[in-house]
Image 1 (spheres, rainbow, N blue to C red):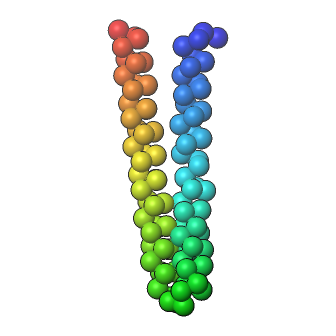
Image 2 (image 1 turned 90 degrees about the vertical axis):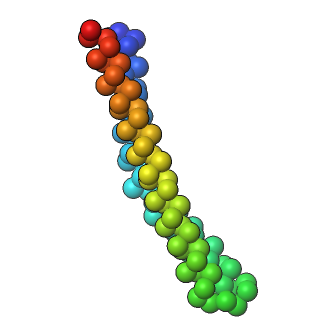
Image 3 (image 1 turned 30 degrees about the vertical axis):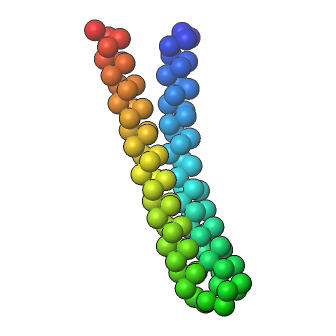
Amino acid sequence: MSDTHRQRSAASLRRIADASSLGLAFPIAILLGYLWGRFMDRSLGTSPWCTVIFTAIGVAAGFLNAVRTALRIGREEDEAAKSDRDGEA
């Protein structure tokens, strides 16, 4: 197995791992926002406002992370396809 093939396989596995991590990262961001909001509500006596606000921030953070990861994976796929085409020519 050539070094180029190994590098491509490693890059493919890294992209798969990044994509599969979204399934955990998104709900974790929401959960952390919710828990922080609950803590703030109990500390400040502002129930339910901090919970709502920080849960929304967690949702936004989860979406932002998903978009960034998807763009990075797409960019890496495009670069891999371009290098494959350049290598065949």
